[in-house]
Image (cartoon, rainbow, N blue to C red; front, side):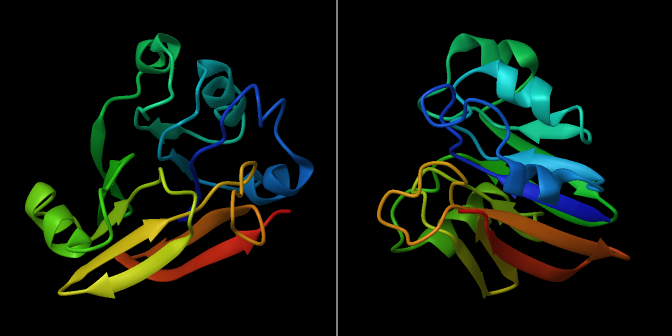
Length: 163
């Protein structure tokens, strides 16, 4: 299973429509995860034309995002991998332990908010922030994540530069 992970697209200020480099990653996706700060549900509708979408609400999202179906947190099974999502994971210090307590059954926790790409594993939990494809802030590139899942295992997690 190929899963594309996005966060912090910040439409319509930063995301007018799906950037071509992001669309290239979305083609052939089996599922799309959006870790919040979509800002408007139009982005989720646009993403859903590529694959099923699971999204969580971010601190900048308007009410249309929740009406679309995003919730503050999400937990789902993707090809046997237990995935949890939240927008803001809090400060870096103590993050792994905090997310383990919040999502005790998760194999992988996806989050956003900081716009800083991160792929880290510790104490049996992997955490993944795809960064932002459109609002890189102090990062050198806009990024998205691509996960490859097989037989309940995360076999590959990549951060892809899209700007």
